[in-house]
Image (cartoon, rainbow, N blue to C red; front, side):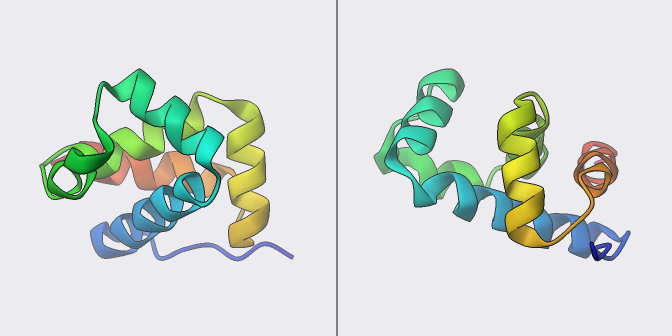
Length: 92
């Protein structure tokens, strides 16, 4: 059974951080994210503190169905929760 993360900004931020950690667990996933985002591994920590980054990681996950499903399964959440969190973070 899937759990639903809190539908709050802080819940959305927690989910985005979990998504980033999931992407970073596998070198190939991380390399692809870095290539598409234009980030350098050394700049990742600084970029993560920038406004919009957390919404961006959820955009990235949402745009790859295989990654979306894998992350949702790993996190034990309904995949639709990722879009809800992305929208919360995009509202600024």
